Image 1 (tube, helix red, strand yellow):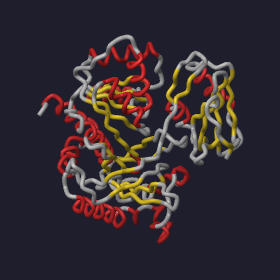
Image 2 (cartoon, rainbow, N blue to C red):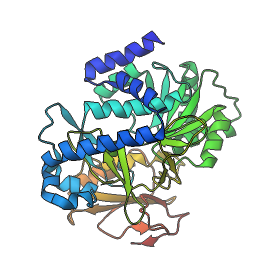
Image 3 (tube, rainbow, N blue to C red):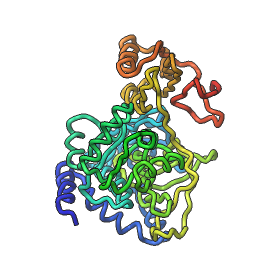
Length: 425
């Protein structure tokens, strides 16, 4: 055991009131229980939530018998936030924001127990590639993974994490990142699939030979990991790539094993589906702000009672069709990860959804608001923030006009109009 590495996490738990180390130890043992035992555990945890927490939550009390068939959406939570607090929860709860991968951010409330589970699930995914507590980790991500306020800076220092911005992925930026990653003897890279793939493409096309003798593996998160991206990343870094999926507000945490199966931790979430096959998840860990049959915006299938060669009993996620994330490229070929816009609009509760359209000359932001007016100061603020980072000949913001949709009717939040042909919805 790496005593110094564990000490980092003991300090984090002591400072934050979490139990990451204990939760990780529990999951390490739990993952190898048989599928029937895990299914019974999930059933028991769900039964406890429905019987002891939900009846003391105003929103579900008002729903009555309809609660078992209702679907919870971000819009419902935003409009009824105070009604989701469980009256019997007396510990501390605190606000968290989603990244808004479908263009609709959400503020919800969570607990130290839920945060402990979230991080334990992430660490479990890292351990499949040989990570040990305290190893140096590189985040290639946006603000949803690596926030820049003092609290998170200290937190990441204790975690031994260095964040490399997915907002800035020009060749010079990437070269600098790679030099630092190698010098810092980074053991694991974690981040957005498209951002890491962009770095991999740079390595593969570079005239310089890069080697990372200390690197144990790469874990992709937040987006669909295509086989092409996986292949690029594995060739560039000469390590294995594993996928990790999380929907924190829904309590979903899944990780890929060495046999290519994506296992989800069913003791922490109950997964159901609506008529269109969209995933509805019930968070079994967050007892302060219960979310029952929450519409995740993702689509995938789950397989129960299957024997995996890795011996883990957790169910398996298959045919994942959710969440993609695109790059925005300006006329100087500067590349910006689309998570920038998620962060830019996150704190404006009047913005229900957004879409970004661009070509080599113009960038247009489409905002769906709960009114037909965007204050002039916000209009200017958004355009100035974009102009400070990206170079186009023309910029525009359109309010409450139809979005463009892909052929499969899924909302596209970034569209390159030079390449994509979409239809209004």
